[in-house]
Amino acid sequence: MARAATTADAFNAVAEPRRRQILDVLAGGERPVNDLVHRLGLTQPQVSKHLRVLREVGAVAVRDEGRQRLYRLNGRALKPIHDWVKDYERTWSERFEQLDAVLEDLKESEADGKGAGG
Amino acid sequence: MTVSSGTAKVTLPSDTQILITRQFDAPKHLVYRAWTTPELVRRWWSGYRGEMTVVDIDLRVGGRWRYVMVANGGFEVAFHGEFREIEPDERIVTTEVYEMPDAPLDEDAVINIVTFTEIDGRTTLHLMTECRTKELRDTIVDSGMEGGMQEQMDVLEELARSLR
Image (cartoon, rainbow over all chains, first blue to last red):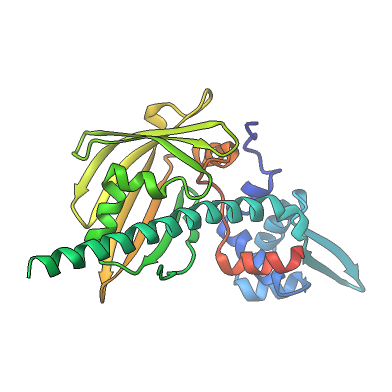
């Protein structure tokens, strides 16, 4: 079950903050490389390097249109991450819902205690 | 009546950290009490996923804690650790080890830093899990236990849309 820590892995691919930014931009729609360079304030080689890693894990797809290379997000490849986060959040949200109920009881008994103590 | 205070917010501040944030409609001394009192922890820690069979809390610096839950599927999950710092009603630092055959050793334990911040009678809880290495965090993700890789929530919302 252990997963090898290589770059060919969606989890590791998106662990890098700049790559997350790229995904964030692409979440808004398909973009040419120049647009990413402009938005992120990086050099074209830097952006290309990150895009290569993201392409390797299938997180982004590319197509040529005329002289432009257009990149787009491929949500499928990121589904494992999405699933993990949702599961993690659900686990803690469930716990916290139960904790809410415990806290309501504690507040009540504290209020009762104060009332009884005058 | 239970006042819903919203869902847990999960973010990843760095490659080795996982942060959960949640607000509670109660003063911090009560949230702290619910977090550190065994019979209260029994009532919430398993969520809706099972029953707590062991909740041991030796609430002093150097003291140990251990939680065991029997999940609804019948399997058992256990965690243990040690208290490193205790500031009543304010902050607790513990180690945490997930007990499984290929689990991290005690020296690879993650560090959990819990802080309780009260404003106008409401408490914001921050639970920061710090892994010593990125590899450890990845191991945690793989175990499916808790912790691991996470995207910023705004990105995730976009992803969720793209996955539909």
